[in-house]
Length: 455
Image (cartoon, rainbow, N blue to C red; front, side, top):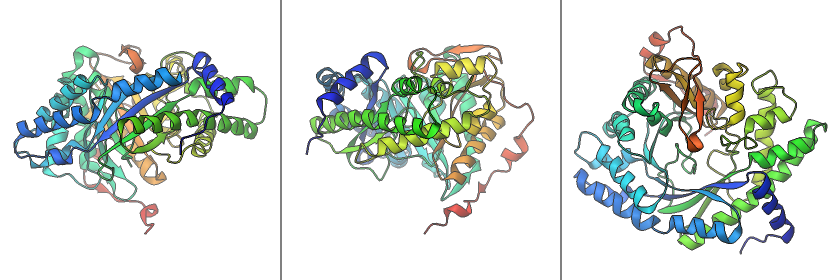
């Protein structure tokens, strides 16, 4: 049965689009590549390219047509694929860079801006194929434009794979070095997860999980500007009432996402998967999660009370959106990326928002420490320790957390790095100087918490 949208809802959506930066942030087509495995990497690459192009040939045109017909901007059309460590396991090659290049060529061929899935799931241990993929990440991200990578190093059920955490610190450093001419841009396309969802439509962490169908459409909505308008219109009401009004607004924007997702799935002749309810900010003023928090009464994002305000916002978004769609999935919450949120950038520059406060905020939001720029000379062990801290938050709290951190070559605290577009710009944030190297070097696996015993 088609989703019924009333004329008043249509008019309200037009206002949201025109005045409040409302958009569908991404339609992401997930594609299984498990049948592309082959012992010859050239043949596997050929199969990967061919299948991606065949399955997604009309993706961009479909998104643009829906945008034109319904008047709702569909900003990004993207692809996620099966974790390449699984697809490449049969290959006899020493690394998987050629597979990343095939993904990149296919993404360019069909016109999407990002393709995710150069990924591995290693929360309990690493196979030979996982190690090949992880060690290929720096070169793969340096030599491609559209490929995104992710590694799941922890889960509530498995604990934290500290060997993988230690390795990823070194991989991030190497990726930054190989893309030093672009401000370490390769690291902006690499996410380290705890409890990674298999149906996330947002980059850089999207991959098509092994439990997913042959192909599926997942949609990520975005409405910080819409929610900000609600907060500004209600400057003095009690927080419980404000939460209710945010819920009602989130319901409306999620309904639009459901409509777009189901229509895209119908036209692409694949199943409709999920709606990701995340509030995804952009560098534009008025499209900022930090501004929403400040609109609630905080003088500046990062001051005392920020975590409580963010918790309320995140919960209201989830409650409102869950009523408007059949299937909620992905990350779902409020994103707090520094470089992609104008209010976050200002708070960091003014000294209100620091790395420790951001870490505290990730306890109550999705996803984690996102688009954080740190000094280029930050030791790999410190990067690993930051990942371990964030993974621990996710593991203990049974939620998805992640780290996307960029040690910017040649930059120090007080400098900034410009990435452009949706990736924005980032002030270089200080990290603790005290070493965690001995802790990280212990390796092994931090055991799963008592909360994991749910069987």
